[in-house]
Length: 53
Image (cartoon, rainbow, N blue to C red; front, top):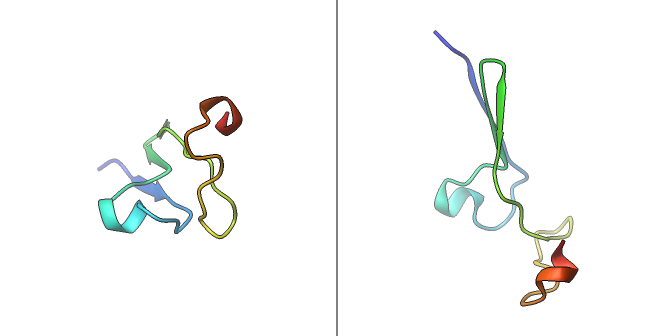
């Protein structure tokens, strides 16, 4: 059986929608798209794609 690990930061959207920042399956890590947020989970620079990068 292959081990599966989920990595999250407990920010908005993760628990509500089953979103994980990354998933490790065996020796492979799948990284999801990231949103710009601070340590408290507040989104930064809404509507400004360049600033979010």
